[in-house]
Each structure stands twice: as C-alpha cells, then as structure tokens.
Amino acid sequence: MERRDFIKIFGAGAAATAVAACTGKGPQAASGKKEPGEMTYRSSSLGDKVSLLGYGCMRWPTTTNAEGKTVIDQEQVNSLVDYAIEHGITYFDTAPVYGQGESERVTGIALNRHPRDKFLIATKLSNTRDYSREAALTMYKHSFEAMQVDHIDYYLLHSVGGSSGSFSSMEVLQKRFFDNGILDFLLKEREAGRIRHLGFSFHGDQQVFDHLLKLHDENAEKGGRSLWDFVQIQMNYVDWNHAKLMSRRNVNASYLYAELERRGIRAVIMEPLLGGRLVNLPQHAADKLLTRNPNASLASWAFRFCGTYPGVMCALSGMTYKEHLVDNLATFSPLEPLTEDDLKLLEEIADDYANHPIIPCNDCKYCMPCPYGVDIPGVFVHYNKCVNEALIKEDRQDPNYRKARRAYLVSLDRSLDRLRQANHCIGCAQCVDTCPQRIQIPAQMRRIEAYTEQLKRDQSPL
Image (cartoon, rainbow, N blue to C red; front, side, top):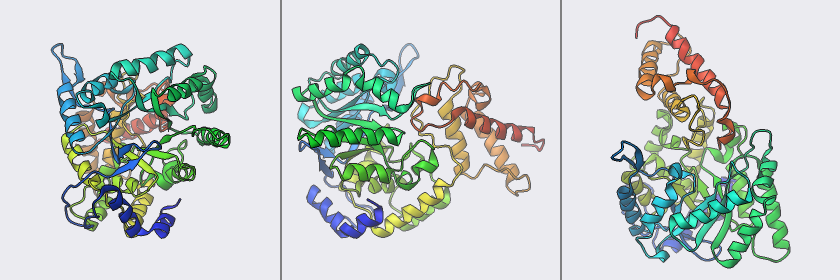
C-alpha cells in the first residue's frame, strides 16, 4: 500500500484513533514536547502484547576488563533492560552472532532477572557459513542455553536473501534451510511450543522473498497454520521508495510491506533509522524537520513513519545509550501517527537524500574483521559524515575547497588509524558476501582512496 493510499483510506484522524484505542490514550499535539504516557502496543498472531518499540540487542554498551579486553558491560545492560521493561518495552531482539557471540548470553542474564511473562525474546538461526544440519541444531540449542529459557517467542531464519561465493541467493536458501531439513525441524519445534512464532529476516534478493511468501500461500491453501507468523524487513522513509537506488540488491520497503500486509503477516522493522543515517541528515534536510517541529528529534520522525503503518508489529532500535532509550520511549508512549503533510515532507527529504552521493553502509560490522586490517564501516562512516557536512569538494575553484580539504584530511586521520584506511584494501572481496546491503566494498574503497589521494597530492597548505 502506498503512503498516499494509506492516508486516503484511513485518514490521519483514523490512524490516530487506532493508536488511541491501542494505548488507551488520545494523541498528543503535533508540535511541542509531549508528556510520556503508556507505550503503544500491537498484537502478534497469537495475541501477544508487543511493544511497538523493540529493543535491538546487537550493540550493547562495552567496557574494558582487567585483561584490557573490550567486553559487553553487563551492569549497564541490566540497567538499560530494567528501564526498558519498566517503561513498557516487551520485545527484545538478539542473535547468536551479535556482540561477538555474547549478546544472547548477556541479554539472557539481564532479562531473566524479571518474570518470564514480562518480556518477549526474539533470536535467529544465523547459519550463514556452515550449512550442515549439525551446525544448525547446535546453534539452535545453544540459544536456549545462552538465554536460559525453555521457549523462544520469536524465532527467525536469519539474513535470508543473500548469495555466497558461487552460490546464488536461491541456492543458499535451499542449502541453509531445506536440503538439511532444518525448516521442517523448526516447524515441529513450533508445534511442540518451544518456538511460539516463526519468521525470517529478509536482506536482498526479491526472488527469495517472493518464493518464501509463495510457500506461505501454498501452506495456507492446505488449511494449516500460517507458515510465517511474522517477517523482519528493512523499512524507513528513504527505503520506502528508494532502496533499489540506494543499493542494487535491495527491494523497496513499500513492496515488502504491501506483500506482507495483504497476507496478514506481521512486520517487524529493522533499520528504521537507516543505520543511524537518518539522525545525521544533511543540514538542509534536518532544517526542514526542525522547522516543522522544533521539539521533535530527527529519530522520532523516522520511528513515527514506521509506526504509522498498522501492519507493523514492532520497530527495532539498538539503544546503546540511555538517552536514546529515553527519546525513543517518548516517541512511542504513545505513538503519534504522521499526517498526510508529514508524509509528503518525508517523501521530499527521501527523494533528495536518495540522490545524495553517500554509501549505504549501516555500520552493522558483518563485513568485519577485514583480513588486511581495514576498518570498513569506519571508512564509510567517515566518508558519509563528510558528505553530510558538505566537505566533499571535487572542484578546486570552489571557494570552500581549501577549508573542506583540510577538514576532510584532518578528520580522516583523527577518525581512523592510517593502517586501517581505504588505501590498505587489496580488493579480495571477502567482505562483499557478508554485507546485507550488498555494497561493492572494494569498488567503494578504491573510489574513496582515489579521492583521498587527490586531496593529498594537492600542494596547497592545510
């Protein structure tokens, strides 16, 4: 369903009424800070009370232990989880590969200090390297042990839709979940109640997405329980109509959402902030949103976009710091759906942003570690920051060229160790298959290196 159609059919007032019915509170004023109220909830296929704001557990806060090693700070995690549950968050999303393999354990410790009916836990089968049945079963069983639970509320086939080496995306799907009998096993686990909801997280190839929904339709024709209870997709106001432009392998979120909605499959949203890029907008774009509502954070606009769609069950946010948690809670407690004018404004910003020469890196770090020491996401984060701050200047005649050149080169060396910069990429392409955005990383590294070398060769003083 297109945004315009949604507003035409339901209307901003109807959408607000739906939220009020769900939260028991009326909508707040569109401008000015609101007093936080009750969290907005949506229902799962089994009637779970799911907080519209979900806690993404990929990037927990870290500390340095006695041996000088960086580890997840359990005390801070406990404090964040306590605050989240106290303020109505019920949905916590983790995976075996998050936090260098420690997220499930750390998250489990924090959650199990609360009654089991106070939280819903989501985790994933991240068998992206070893496709054997034995490896998949070991990973599945370890999730229960790490999180100290006897059932998993939401279980996902992780990162579905990517290719690997000589294998196409469809071949990888077949090897990961069908040839080894793992999907059949998970369906039996759902029947036994050890999995309550089964779904998948989608990254990439539309052929895979369509195939999995076709299987869902065929299963429905047999009169059984839905094959997929929910699906996790990347959705934000830029990817709604511009995902294909941003990265050649992505699928527009408007298509993904519409296909799920017409089947009644709940959508869980990842990357509502586009890897943090929607809180670091170019200044002219940020000014438009601040003019519309000076008291609203840039993040709140992106979250409200996702929540405006009734088929969204939960929007995930990786809230490493308490200030992020507090701000996001205010956005969803309760949610104020966007108006038609709000949606038009975001569409204008998205159109402009999609044509901005940034690299669509979400800083997920799936590409790491680089065997040659390059800080791949660090290189992209620095470059995108310079784009947003208008520090990328190709024309030496530009009156701001010298100032921008100096700022770019100085910030590069401050942000990244010289041995970890783009010029150390040898183009092995090992990172490409692991990138959910399917960025052609070596090509982008060469482009950034060429631009950086151009600036360095310029003899004008810094």
